[in-house]
Length: 370
Image (cartoon, rainbow, N blue to C red; front, side):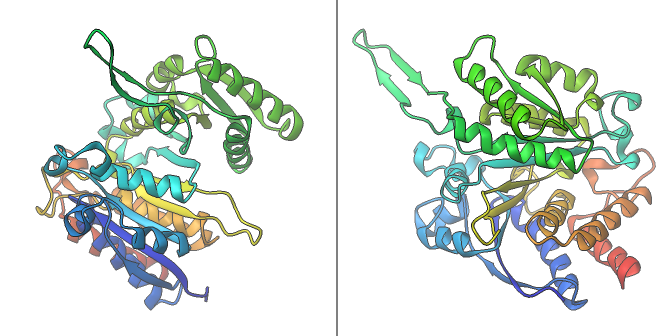
C-alpha cells in the first residue's frame, strides 16, 4: 500500500464545499480499501478565507500548501465579494497560491466522453473522440509582470496598463512539460502565440523551435497564432494533441476547449511546479468550473470535474496510474449508464443530485475494485 501523503483540501466558495465533500467520499473509499492513503488537512481560501481572516489567503494556509504533497481546490469567488478592493478579492488568493508555489504549468484536458457527445453544441462528428491537452504557462506573462496599474494622466483621463513579457527560461520549462507529455500521448505539440504582432511571441516561437531541435526532435512540432487556434478549436479540434501557450492565451483557449465537451462541470485541471532534487513537485488540482453561486447550497452541482481532478492528482503527483484509471473508469461507466447531474442530462433522463452522484461513484468503484 502506498505510504500516507500530505493532502491539503481547500473547498473555497460557492459549490466548492459541495463538490469537495464528494471527492472526500472517494478519498475515504481509497483509504478504506487500502489502495491509497492520505493525511488530509482542510483549510480556507478565497471569499471564505476573507470572511474568516480578512485576506483571501492566510499565510498559515500558504505554509500548509508549501508543505503538502498536493493541494485539492474547489472553486473561489462570487458576487458577495465583487466590491472588495482588487487585492482582497477571492481570486487573488488562488493567484497567490499559484505564484508562491511556483506552479508554472497548468494542464487542462478536453476529453469528450462518448456518452456526452450530444451535450456539446458542436456537431457529433466534430467532437466525437476528442482528447486534447492544453498546457498553459501559469506564473508569468501579462497577469503578473510589472509595471501594471491604473494611472491618471495630466489631462485628467485614466489609463490602465499591464506588461506582457517572457524570459527564455520561462518558455523552456513549460515547453519541456509539453514535449514530455506529448511523448506519452500522440507525440504532437502545437505551440501557440502571436509572433506576428508581439515581440514576446517572437521569442516564444524562437525558444520553442530551438528546444525542439535540441532535445525533442522525435516530437512533431507546429506553430499557430492564437486567434487562428481559437478558430481551429471550434472548426477541427481533433487536429490537436498537446497545445502549449502563454498565460493569457491559455486562459482563453482552455475555456474555449472546455465548452467543446458540453459542460465545464466535467473538466479537471492540474497546476504543476518544477521537481526538486528528490523528484517531488508542488502541485494543485482543481476543476475548470467556477463557484457557481446561483446553484450553491442546492445540491445540484456536478462533482465529476473535481473527482477527475483527484484522478489527475493520483496520476501526476503520486504515480498511482492504476488507481487513477480505476476512478476514471468508474466515471465513464456511470455516464454510459445515464447517471447524470442536471447540467448534463438529456431527453428522458432524470438528473441526480451532487450527493447522489458522489455515492454512485463510490458504488461503482466498489463494483470495479471492491
